[in-house]
Image (tube, rainbow, N blue to C red; front, side, top):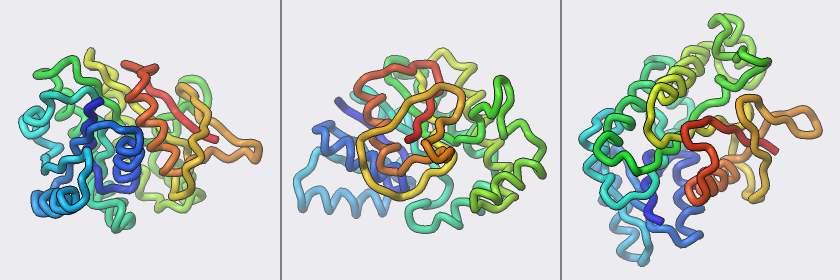
Length: 241
């Protein structure tokens, strides 16, 4: 397959790149920095690979559309800033402008107008998963949601970003494009690649200890699994141990 990855230098994006390459797919890896794309391409030339790098502006539909020809699937792991190098900076930028997630979703969908057969998989947030039928943490008022986030080790101010992720999902839900949205487990962090995870729909999954968790590595496995065998076209799904 030919797979594009937006945010290929981020925490989940880089692991998705490694996972897809290991399975023999051809990858077009995107970063916002032209200089970084050139540097990564230099590495690829030094070590032959099925990866090509390019810079793309996730806020510009034309920039995205220019790279869609030949792609079977576009995976978006977009995060503001470089989450792999400075997670705190990413959190701060998400709080400063929580509208970026919905803006990028609209940009992606607009780009797909030119290539409607290309599938889109968006790595999203867990805050829009239902705590009970029809109710999600993202629907709480900002103060209540902030208290829940602090228990997970995130600043309470990040509540606005959680709502921003929810808005991105709502944006996708209005589209007739071939989109899929992955909400990870409530706790996601670096870990090991087990290749094993459970799949759910709109409610979070919990392990035997009552924790909703997944590693970045297994989130990448799930993204590539969905790219290879689509099961959730025009739907959201979740994963967890």
